[in-house]
Length: 209
Image 1 (cartoon, rainbow, N blue to C red):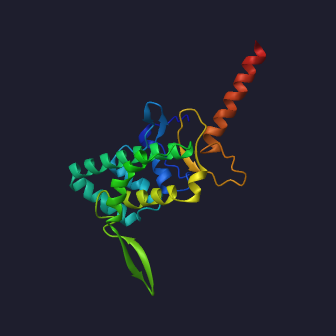
Image 2 (cartoon, helix red, strand yellow; image 1 turned 90 degrees about the horizontal axis):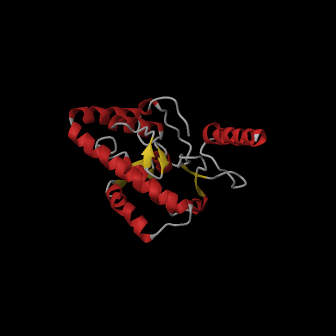
Image 3 (cartoon, helix red, strand yellow; image 1 turned 30 degrees about the horizontal axis):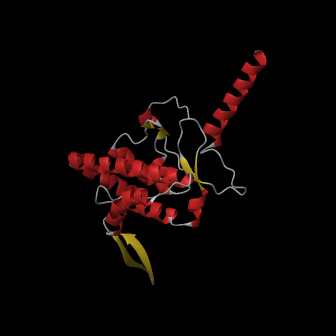
């Protein structure tokens, strides 16, 4: 994908169909790794989490205040975010191409165990409800529902609908919920249109020879 604005100003896009996929999609991916990274800081991560519905605005503000008060802890939490994102990118790409292995899944088990240690049952009126104890207080807490979402997705029938965008040096992942199962692009407005432009250019060059 081609973007004209600096990485810190690139908007987040929530097109994957799941927050764990959208976390992967905070960067573009090439064989060399992530680039045009939208997660330039811990603060940016909390803003992404708000947009993904993982945090409320109040929780995000509380975490940003804690990060300012404890910059070393925030840096460590941000390192953890980047590690988990890379694990998810590897796993989802493998799942989309039919190459998930036990060793790949094992990389997700430690953050999954950490997340589940904070998952608890509570009440909401007359009903029981799952909730995350410490969400918005622990600096790594936005990762908990993301990792849990990833595990549920990989264990679901929708894992067979995981796709990697066909765009050059994009690497974004998504669940293909189209009726015919033929979705090729993360977004038609970006990678899809860019591919069309490249095809037209190639046809013009061929006609000129």
